[in-house]
Amino acid sequence: SELLELAEKMPKAELHLHIEGSLEPELVFKLAKRNNVRLNYASVDELKAAYSFNNLQEFLDVYYAGMSVLLTEDDFYDLTWAYLKRVHEDRVVHVEIFFDPQAHLERGVPLSIQLAGIHGALEAGKATLGISYRLILSFLRHLSEESALETLQLARPYLNQLDGFGLDSSEKGHPPEKFARVFAECKKLGKPITVHAGEEGPPEYVWQALDQLEVDRIDHGNRALEDDALVQRLVATGQTLTVCPLSNLKLCVVDSMQDHPLVTMLEKGLKATVNSDDPAYFGGYMMDNYRAVIDQLPLTREHLHQLARNAFAGSWLSEADKKKHL
Ligand code: ES4
Ligand code: ZN
Image 1 (cartoon, rainbow, N blue to C red):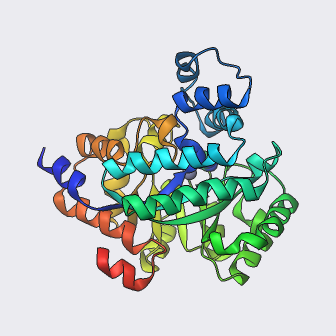
Image 2: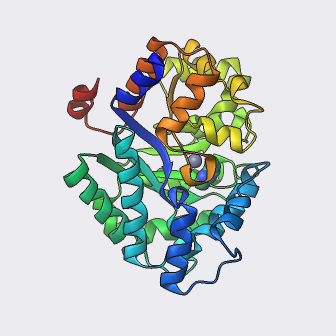
């Protein structure tokens, strides 16, 4: 369709992508073999059969199992390079990606190894594919404040390779305020922050992200729509929401794509963007997400332009670089 062609040809930015969530089943098995890691799945098909989730936690259990094959610098490089090559085909020209260092530190993989691979591939992608990037260290909210603070200490020698900080994993029972001191430290470093809030958790968690953490973006934010005063606040302050349509469908945040609030968000003046979250697990990359919402929602040309603009405007590019895209 005409809308699909427009979405394909627009230069796009992806602001919500967990690099470990781009680990395709085929690469899981290749790396398992390379590293002599035993998997609890006999084949690619058996692993893929586990990709059926009723909620965030059921997904996270499979996500952490999948990433257990990531051990060497080459593994992190190959993972990141495969993602960049794939989104280059979707005309993604800027990416701001998360990684979960605590998940790899737990398996004994040093931060230096993780970063050498991820950052090396991002630099190669910039040089050969022309994809600009920001790299976001994301803390796991199901772990303690102390663990996050230790991780931030470990990261201090590498701050030149870290562009911001995030918060992900199991949301319910782990409100943003649990990490108020951690993110105050991050702010002192002069880095932007973004946290997952209002995916499964209540509007109260979005309020905390704004008032207690002073975030620069909200990841997901779907449940903000339950609170009119919160919507007003997000609109008035121009907060970017990094929305993930296929993720929301696969994790049962919405019952069907026709029920997805993306258009409602735009109509209310919220700065929503389209992102893939964990594309290997949720049924696709940037264009698969655009295709799904174009097929199922009453989107217009203007909505598509707005979505693309919102992503560049809400990115952490310099004002000069944003201007080139806006
Ligand atoms: C995640 Cl969809 C989602 N939500 C929270 N944490 C995550 N980590 C990776 N994907
Ligand atoms: Zn996410």
